[in-house]
Amino acid sequence: MTFSLLARDPESGAFGGAAATGNLCVGAWVLRARAGVGISASQGHFPSTLWGEDVLTELAKGIAPQQAVQTIVSADPGRASRQLLVLDNEGTGAAFSGQDNIPAMSELVQPGVCAGGNMLSKPDVIAATVEGYVSSNASFARRLLAGLFAGAKGGGDARGLMSAALLIVAPDSPPIDLRVDFADAPLRSLEDLVIRTEAEDYEAWRRALPTRASP
Image (cartoon, rainbow, N blue to C red):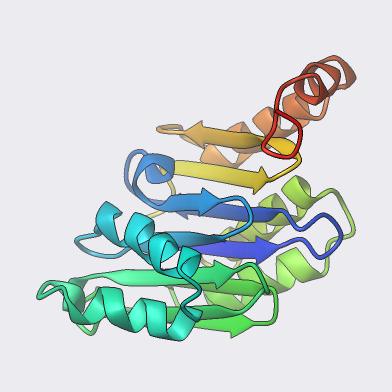
């Protein structure tokens, strides 16, 4: 139903996530992040928004990603219909895919990157998503966007796409939380939002806002 990409930018230490689905409002359901702690994507046939928040709470305690995922997953009797991805402040990732999610399912964890999806047109969508991200030399937001476009080109959600989202958090920068809740071409609409956030006037305004590092 959804494919998602999580990444940690090694230069800035920012966390970024991008997701797309053939359903409504993917940004509200899937992506969660805490600057300096980690980022998560909770999705699946019957996703749990609780998982996305709770796994970050485990990371904040100093629990390693794999153990954090195991703690959250093992306590939920509905886990077979859910999928969880997480990346911590060291760029270490972990993933879980319940067996009752709709195939094709796939997940890929690499240093600084974690991606996964379910109800995909084919498993290769996730590898294409990661490759689209790592092969881009653009800004962090555009690299995340490149991952989504590559995943969509590789087949994407088996139903097509209806919504898309992009989230970036960092201690020294205001968050970027972009959501296209419904559109005929959600990735193009999301791209338009990214372009607008990188405009000089908007970026200057963002730099004047308080942050955790400079409240």
